[in-house]
Length: 146
Image (cartoon, rainbow, N blue to C red):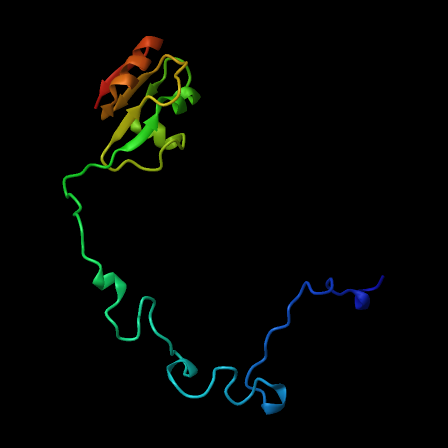
């Protein structure tokens, strides 16, 4: 085998369609865009959702509900994820971010009871579910509301 014999496997490389190179090529003159009109021109076409001047769907459908400006988005942590800490560790928001359990803290951290906790930890968070509190204290851990 020599370098001049190397080539890709059959049908693995698709040839690019060459446009606007004379009528004999089959893709000349209008370059496969049809004749005249908005779509034949450079930068032509309509925006997504445009329905030819008809009132578009996103404006026909009524608006519903609202977004509360007082809602607090807590970062959710299940106690099953806290088993990566060592026995007796203090778990804070900063530690949770460092270990990659949560990405960032917006309004605080809420601990929920999904999974099971095997380690005795001191957990500092903004909110706890009732079941999570009982699970943590049954193992011998402590909770602190920050």
